[in-house]
Length: 392
Image (cartoon, rainbow, N blue to C red; front, side, top):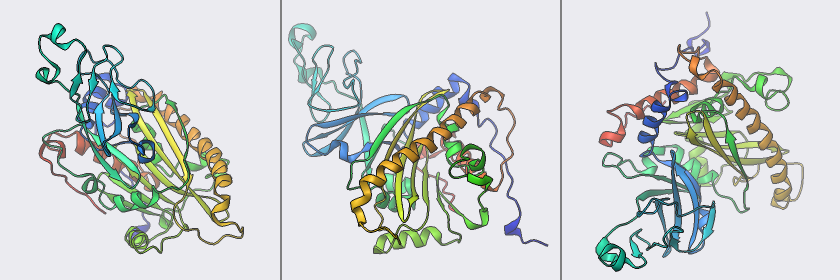
């Protein structure tokens, strides 16, 4: 008889898993909860100079991150006066001044320069004592994450990511400016992530690349590691695959010799993937919710920061700019195919009543929905600052 490890692992998804993909009220409730979950915002390189800022979103709420007096600060992107957006482009440099009435804010987000304040409001600016909604920030490597403060949101960024943290820190370093693109996906952000954590779709969705020749991955030659609400994929087998990777990254012996993909709740993917003859590249993808049937896909692609493995081509890092162009074209093609798959799933969202059948190459979809349910549950970490960690 075959051993237990070779048996198919078949499961399902929690009841009600799809409601926010077709119900606007469920989507709104979801986004209220996820406002207090660590969410990817952007790259530290975009706020390298004093006064630099970039715009992002936490759930459906617009925010911006800015370097002020040498420190990174985050605020909701709306004036405290009449809620006018303070930042109306993706990035820039300059003071925080509202374009509606010229209210000006200091580094703490307090209104300090209110025009004609005494005449209009009867008090001077400091007596009005009004300011911007703050965003709590955390940094991992060159990646900036944020959340809106909440009494129950006490888990640090490092604790939330667990064993994913050192892997993210190592893979997020880049000496070259990443190639970037973004665009809408006509699908709920969770369906985009379902495609990202599914390895069963490769032959059907990527017939000219990952699934060329109709070949399916051998689950016994892969390692899926569950890390709290997150997971890591490696195309090498073994229960110690992640521990060995982290140790190698810590002692400097890690090299580009296999695929690594980190999937973070709520909508973040960082992959280290083979491109050509010993060259690997990283693709950072974030799915930002817009509404229950639309998301914004943001992508950055750059050469892998890990030391190269064996290559027949001389030149070292001198070829990185050329490889980066190839990786950008390759990544855009692959991610476009994934986006179309998510959009086709979305067309049937209102019929997702029963739990789908989940097999061994899809088990991270099940993990993802279990982690989502935990965050949405009233007794989740959002309420008491604790987390029911499930590391496997």
